[in-house]
Image (tube, rainbow, N blue to C red; front, top):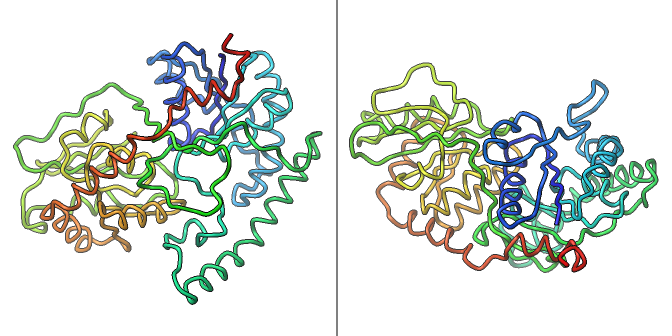
Length: 391
């Protein structure tokens, strides 16, 4: 089974595809990841092939602030450029990121089965939930149901506009206006981060987080045996700014009231000056979290899932995108405190609360254990490719 995987270049979308490619190749299925070429060297070091996703760079006339245009006209252009690339590779299956819809459209154009991958919880609008991004639980009672209904109505217009933009873009390149359903939907998250809904899509399956480490470097820890705190600024452009500086100030012994050690972990963390009890760099986060007592991060799905799998509680400082939604789900689960707006006093208080209360770590462990019953992504890919591929 030959598999083409398509995702944008942001780490939160490229890394899960690289993780899935690794799983496929370990199970004997050649895989190529079409994404940003910036990850090619790190991928090659792990035996994975990355090819530049055609059309990924925005043109001067592209409006990336208009999500409908990005998922419509630009996706259509990228689809047309991707079709010959896929035709040359001759995959049996295409896996496309939920927001990189050109992959599914290109597969459809070539008559190849395709799967949609959500590298986070299912963010599809639901008739039983408040709009995704609000961070709210479903309302209860008459007033709660009215609130949710009004919020859904407020977002429905934008959803319909996006649907019309996509339908027009598809028709312009010879596809049916309404896209067919994928062969499957893989939801790459922990059950602890999902929420029940009355309209769960047919064919959508939880497979657990797809996590990939872009380096083999092991972090050096600061000396001593004080609790280890990991500070992980968001890789997303919408992440909260100033997290590193405020976190280091909040963790200072004279502010926190106790001594900790800190590791600032990022793809390229920028730190002007570090105290003696802190280090900064780029290294394996999975190995680091095995010794951590707490993670301070933005609440992006990758770091949140890694922390939960390691049984490490979090102080979350959400920025834009889906970080507020995820932060509130983690808070309700009981493994996190949420800080917004970001201040030294608020971050220090949240850190003290978690370090002094074992219930947060216990909840984080339960969240990680919730992934014990997810389905096997490779098996689902093989099923979607069809029995003739496996003969």
